[in-house]
Image (cartoon, rainbow, N blue to C red; front, side, top):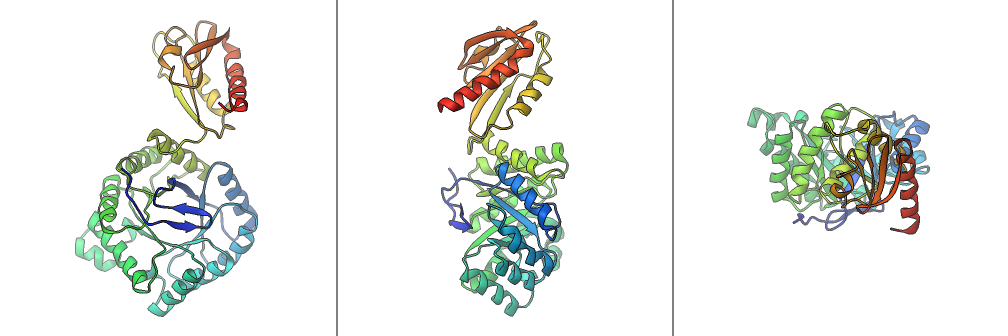
Length: 353
């Protein structure tokens, strides 16, 4: 059962409660380069990204948010470190959310100014604690980053905001250590009702980072913990969004676009199934409605093994089959299978199936 959390809104996106788990990413452009940042955000939006975060490194970047906001369609979160003035300017420029730790941005008077402006405009703040940047006194207390240390740091920042009568809060306690991250979120989920943003920070390159993120996020999501996710990869941000949806889809939490079922091949396979599956994935990248597609290597058992899929193909010796819901609908040369598969999917989606 999913953990019940407080509902907040970042722009027009609702987070927490029974709302869908939100997939977000962060730009890797210089925010001051408005055209490049807008282009990347719109590419992310086309990929299904629902919230985007941008780095605000100085006043010029904070000012750029106004023009960026005018050219994008998804909510924008300003990522702030240490300088409360960047938060104030980001709010003034139209940011839909802030990512900052209130204990690190200035004096209590500075924090009050940011909180006042955020409250006036109903702008939520995400408290983002990372194991690599814990406060010195907390690190000294625990000796090393631990789950308890992450949670203590997060709650310290939460109390600052709560004492200022502010509760539009979202929290993350990230680590590159999957076990540490999982335990931190488990502990935090027992302490607060605020929505939680999940992520394995600095997870690594696309392949390694995908594995770590799938394990960490998958464990927590399967336990009902988590309201938004980001898959942090050393790679294109659009890939983060794709992997995020794949994780949610594997857990049956959200469906978007293609779900590809393909066999691992064996000695009976008489077709280059790896190339065929990759071609199907590439050719069907345009699909944004949930559909389950099979690419099988055995025409004898393939349709039966994949009868739970909406549509599929099974390669054989020079010829293969196209099937729908396990029933054969065409027998064709191997080189025509992917074409026929795409045509069938277009018919299905056109029919509203």
